[in-house]
Amino acid sequence: MAKNIEKITIKIEGKEWQDALDKTFKKKQKDVRIDGFRKGAVPKEVYYEKVGVSSLYMDSMNEVVDSAYQKALKESKILPAIEPVIDVTSVDENSVTFEITIVGKPDIELGAYKNLKIKKEEVKVTAEEVKEEIEHLRNEFAEIKVKEKGEVENKDTAIIDFKGFIDGQELEGGSGANYPLEIGSNTFIPGFEENVIGMKVGDKKTIHLKFPDDYVKDLAGKEVDFEIILREIKTRILPEINETFFEDLGYDKVTNEKELKEEVKKILTEKKQQEIDDKYIEEKLQKASDNMKVDLPDEIIHDEIHRMIGQFEEQLKMQGLTKEQYFQYANLNEETLHENMRPEAIRRIKYRYLLEEVAIKENIEVTDEEVEKDANEMAENYGITKEELLKAFGSEEVLKYDAKMRKTLEFLKNN
Image (cartoon, rainbow, N blue to C red; front, side):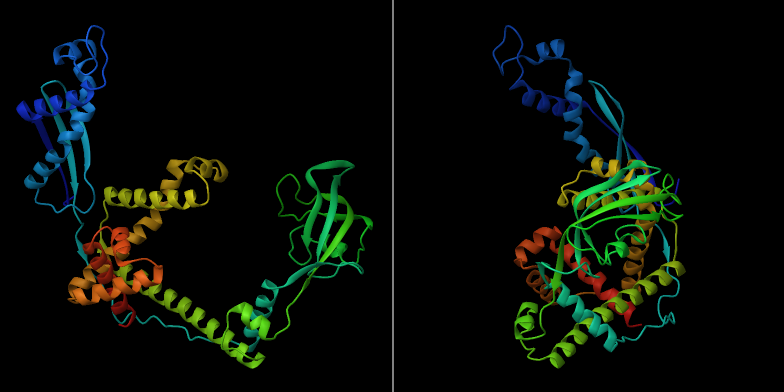
């Protein structure tokens, strides 16, 4: 068995176990119905005879599991790094026996974590990037209007009916009615959108194309005919670069195009700087953790994966999905999801242990004043009260740990 893993067997018997059984019986007695006795008045002996003492085991084990764990901790010299694994090895009317696996933090040997000679990129924002971003913003605020006259042009949205045919047979899933096709989006196979350009409302057209060789297996490389009817053309009217546009963007201090370019450049610079900073610290963490020696037991990896899956399920709920629905859509199961998350779990654990060890090595601590300041800033950023923030974190100790890790991260970033 690994050095920092210990299995301890704890047996609960005698009065402690009998008290647990009695407590569970009194809870169940309130609702049990047995002929000849009033509800809530069934004697224990009759309950044992008619229902069976085994019906009390599960709840009774829950009653004593915490005391069993506390006993195990007293016997162990290991400080637990994760929640214990508790298995029931035997249970009957006289006793219950638990096997408790306590997993401690593995031994860690820091390698080089400072002066790693990782080059940080410089922020560069070109005039062309500023121009493209302004055009992107104009497109976001564009007004969509029906084009009463004229023909389909690039960037228009063509409302079409279409049907696909292969060897004269209608293509399954290859048709649509009143489909909004944005020209230039490359939604359809090559050549389709190009053939829609120039069509006028009411026009009908048959085009001959070929599916790409890297398309889905059943259609790759096959020739196809599409019958197209153009029902309507919608075009985007881009806003003028004026005060109304600046107001829509929320740029209160911008009054002309020159100032708009300066503001957009500033925002793009900040965004790129953040991306560069994130990439830089990620590379540092990766290299420093690669230099670190640590043997991670499966128990700790599985615990992290379990936590990640819990977070993933919460994200799915926000999208109105269950884990089972996701499995169906993604053609996955619990085992493959678990395995897919393993590399990321290992990375997270290593980074966490790296930061903890660097904090010890460099004597990095946080004061109560620093924690208070952090808590107030975070609460303000999230738009919640400090009390709500503390509730979300669970305790002040967790908040203090988080502040310490962020301070250590900043140390690594600058050394």
